Image (cartoon, rainbow, N blue to C red; front, side, top):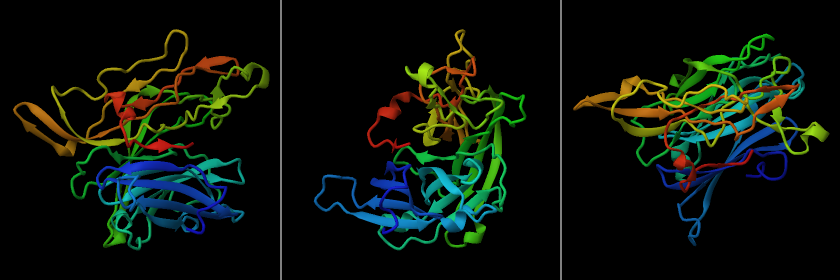
Length: 347
């Protein structure tokens, strides 16, 4: 992994592949100008204290899939997010224009050859899709960025052939007047390792109760720095809320669920702005209708639990006004954040 060392990378993750009982470490690497890699190490055991512990290591060149702007500079692969699935490891990247104030102009999603990587064999080439496609030379503001891939949250695998899911919010249209959105973007990635031309990446949208992204400013829609620190009044420096996206450790989670009785989507927990303008979290539930079987009046779901939350608890106070921060989050019990072997992310 000669291209995976040194500074200039970041956005590393340490995660646990529950289906294979293996540890996975991944990070972006930037060894030189216009030269990007995604580096992955997979353990040969789940016991990090084992005397036989070793790592299968891989580096994937990103330059061919990121596209370039009109100046010939490769788009910056920002905010990589990683998910384990039955048929692949999946990763997403935001595409940012380094010559236009790192404007988000699109996304890329890739499937990595999980089977061979678990066995220490040569990984087949990544299968990747972009949106927009093709990637433009002069990109404009992209409102559906920061995709989060679903991650299997149990030792029970998704059904064979079940495609991977990605989720993002749809930011307001940046028209100078609209503060809210009613859409989430759900992406379906089907990978075919035998015949890559049959792989697909399809976007659809879910309609939800109106929400306002955190720190949303009609005049500076990409400026999400607004969380107060004790020194903010004197320094005018604020913490980045990253309010224009869903936030890990909130991941779309695949679980086998039995729900008794069946409840309407979004039941419970939906709230609006509090009286003092503080940020609130909304709960909702979304299910895959093609995987429901009825038995004795009960329903069993292979469900995608859409779980995300903004970074805790600050109201926004920028430009003299306080605005609410609303994000989507699942209704499943939050104790899973504290379970062992959960994903730990460095931002």
